[in-house]
Length: 282
Image (cartoon, rainbow, N blue to C red; front, side, top):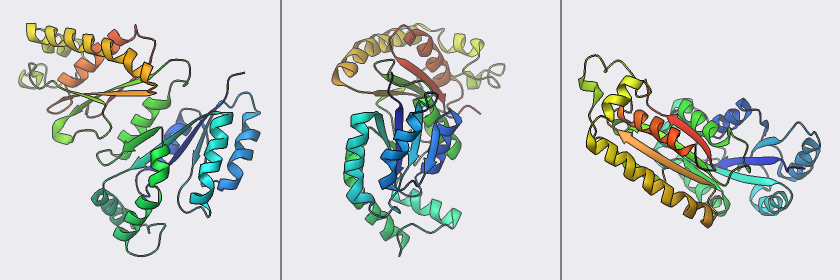
């Protein structure tokens, strides 16, 4: 019988753990937040006995008493029994400070928020090292973070050797922090300057044809396909579970989505789980 998938969401306070957990819930994970560390193993054991429950999400943070002392043992037990992944969320200090100011919520650790953020970061350093996936949410809105988490876990893990996520974005809105391979396609023809194409998106066939009409665009596509074909088996051999490829243009509305759509069609031939995120399509 196939083992259940356990995704443990943890990380810095204010980094979006609640958003990430709700995203898992939206794709049929059985989720629970702030479960006492001592109860996690028995909880998962009980829930996993239900054959219809194959995906479980658990949110944990530093507020839990005994968190730092007990979590290594609990994680070791879970990894031995189930397909367990740790998703660690973080963000830049100034971003966390801004989020706490905007929400007017106190930090779980008492005292000055800036100092609390630094203390929490230091205390969670070992857990961060143990994480399977680290996401810097500094440049994400809640909606974008939700979309990104869903793209990672929408497919059932374990059936394919690696999960590849293609992200289109606009450089003027910031570069995603979680990219393994990054390609700048601002050299391609820009539909934004063509009146009849400007209102359309990169997912539209007419935009795609315009973006790829020149010889250099076709050469670029050939070379990027060749590079990805070369790299994916090497990443799998190395034991990587994820590969995130970012395609950026100026605004993220035309060129980068068009390239991502083309790459998605091409990469379907690989034995991979494949998801796409159009971060900045308006």
